[in-house]
Image (cartoon, rainbow, N blue to C red; front, side, top):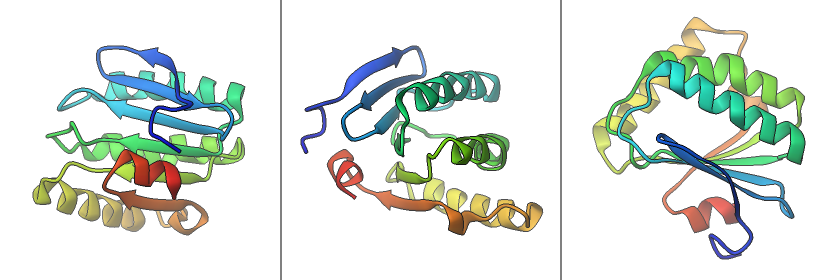
Length: 141
């Protein structure tokens, strides 16, 4: 499948573009900025929740390549609260695109470890989470 072949834009604001491939039940969230304040991040994901529910989304591609600032509280909320809610709706598959910056990537790794340590009840293993380098790869996997 080509990257934009069947993607329809559902949301386009200052922070992100959210598109959906309704045939394959894939949502693509592409961040457009270097940093998303947590309140705006949570508001964005509240909107994504509505789309996940309405379109029966089974897979999400989260393109964070524009980010320059890693924010642990946002990452913790996204995993512990948001992903658990989406799991109940059937969204269990995630593909992530990270900035090429090695410090950012290391921050993500450390952040995941911190979530595991601070939230032992959260089970990363129940999700299919893979990191990809291109949108095409993320859509295919």
